[in-house]
Image (cartoon, rainbow, N blue to C red; front, side):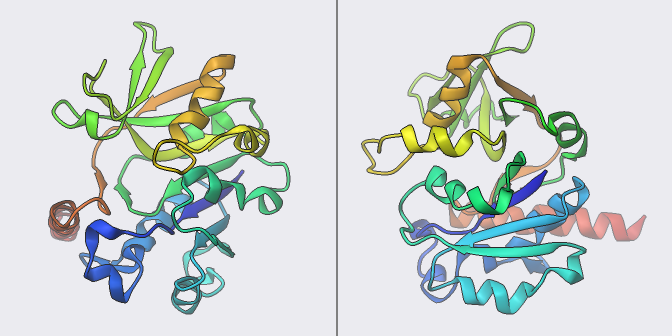
Length: 246
């Protein structure tokens, strides 16, 4: 399996910080945000990773990360020409890179400590897609909301519903089989005039091949606001210092 980290987007909610750099290069405690996604890929057993970003920012990632050797990874890079085109458009850039293999996709502003290695191992070569969800009792409606049956089967995914059917927020972590690029070609822009990842995931749901894993531990969508970026810094600092003092 290969990995894809999406590090594009306009990041308007973090301006003026993102007038000068990409949000995924902003610091989270003692290292750039992008480092956490790379470390998660490595921990999951992924060795080849594609990073997608805009033409104005990609050189910054290359200058910082280079070949990926320091992370024990082999990195490739792809330009997302339309920074506002949506997550599926960025995923589509991995078609040649993935070479027919399944992919693990991370949004680069996800900070988490859930180990993905077991899920990656089980999904290797399998048909379908997997979404990762986190219980967010008071905040789930800010995200895509995943509804599960009593036996854990995905019933529905709704994008930012006014009345959530569960407390399970869809995180920016996904796995897809090699058919994902064909599904993306069938998507149409939403009211926001971009391709929606929830619409992509619902294609797999409609054919009965979408599964969900509930994440444990820390998860922060650090790129959504100043408050979440600050919370990520504080929590990571606390965890890092606690680990060092053990």
